[in-house]
Image (cartoon, rainbow, N blue to C red; front, side, top):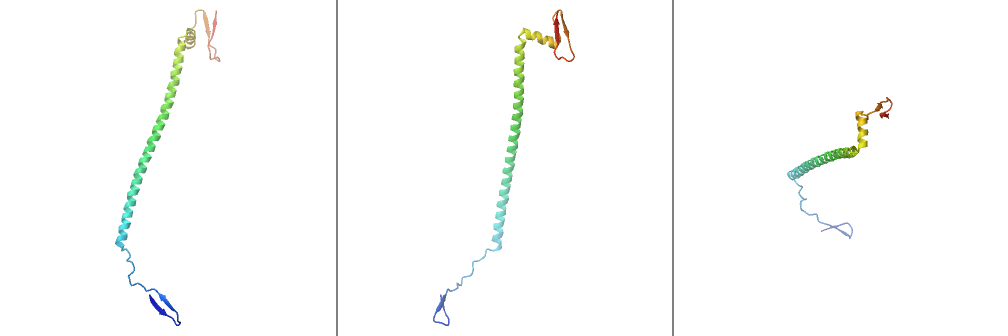
Length: 131
């Protein structure tokens, strides 16, 4: 410390300035190397993110297609089940002779001997009259 005297009896202490040179600034080469490393790491990270993004997108698209196929299959299955139950009911009804006679008369326009069948234009059902 240096002592400086002023015009008075009081002296002021000032710290000595160090003679050490200021800290050396990193040269441009080191800065370029760091920037290059950061750029390479950023590019590699971006490529990895793109690859994972594409994989996730493909997995989601495959999942959506599979779910759509499942829904279509479920609707087909429900239609087939209803058709099967209708056919089972028809088979059980065809074992009944009275239903079978009625079915043959309506579908194939058969009649019993001595019976006259009239088809009316506004009536959906066939009217039969026995004599």
